[in-house]
Amino acid sequence: MEKTITPGRVAGTVLAPSSKSYAQRALAASLLCEGESRLTNMELCNDTRAAMKIAEALGARIAPVEGARWDYSVLGGVREGTVCPVADRLNVGESGLATRLFTPIAALCGRRISLTGEGSILVRPVGMMEEPLRQLGAEVRTKKGLLPITVRGPLRGGEARVDGSLSSQFITGLLMALPLAQNDTTLHVKGLRSRPYIDMTIAVAERFGIRIGHNDYEEFFVEGGQRYEPATYNIEGDWSGASCLLVAGATAGEVTVENMNTLSLQADVAVIDALSRAGAEVISTPESVTVHRRELTAFEFDATDCPDLFPALVALASACDGVSEIRGTRRLIHKESNRAETLAVEFARLGIRVDISEENVMRVEGGPVSGAVVESHNDHRIAMALATAGLRADGKVTVLGAEAVDKSYPDFWDDLEVLMEKGATNG
Image (cartoon, rainbow, N blue to C red):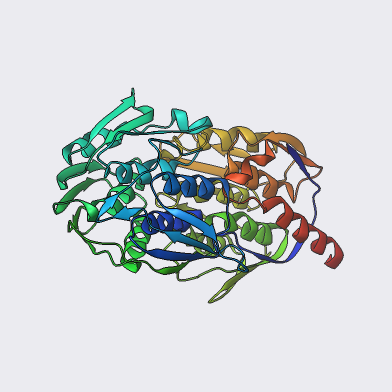
């Protein structure tokens, strides 16, 4: 599918998509209960659908709540402290979080369970999970460090060393699974990145009655034999998905995004800081953010702990006067695409120079945007960033592979069209 962006002003208000990061964690916690939980405001993107199907395969029973849009009842899949799967083959779709979150949970089971996926996830590494899971009592096998991964438990707990430099998602999976292990666990974590995502995990687990401690994110302590308690949990708006819309306001008009928790633990709430550094006007309330266009200047920003912001930040930097510097490109290699290279190639087609020659640094030279045909590389965030940049092009910008947004934000094109229509009316 392709979408064509006609340059112009944007204006108006949209509702943020639901956070798939919170949704997947809440689904995992609900699965690990023995009773019924209720998840509210859980809008379904592709990644959340994949997590829902996995939870059902591992024994949860999930049904929409009648008369309540995006609300779901989840009857947990745990019986007498044990996960009771109804299938032995799980499909994670293209979700990296689902892969690394549900593998340790599947390893709680005393039967052999395999996880596989589709598309780019099949070339994203999972080998870092093998040794820690073995140290904690599970049998593990991968395809030379790639999916499919097969596990057989039960996890016993104990002590394990985990490399957190590539991704925090596997640590999230361990922290959610290990409370159900027989023994207490100490995880020794080296080089943890994306600490805010671990804070999210701990907060979700706590909401379902689980206690997790840590020593400056280098050692994590999980008491075994705990029980998840059913809860009603509201999925907050997604800062990752909203970031491009907020950048659209900063570069092409004014945009308000509602259902945004400005005190969120989500790492990508940092987009507010980046927008302010660039000179945009940002107005926050407890539940919304409004961004107005102003003259924008080059900025410096460290995105090591929020790598999903890179595409939106490049779109922002392309509209700034001067050369912006964004750090943390090491975190971009194993995404839906190699995002650093993809951003450099696709923004070059728009006439924007993106320099990634220096280790762990990206420099973006702001300037006029040219109309062009660009490609998403099947990467949802690349598609949204290219569309955002196209709003101020000198001609039409056509995004190929536009359906990639379904992974996290299925309504993105509709929401952007509403903003463009209102911008044209008010312009």
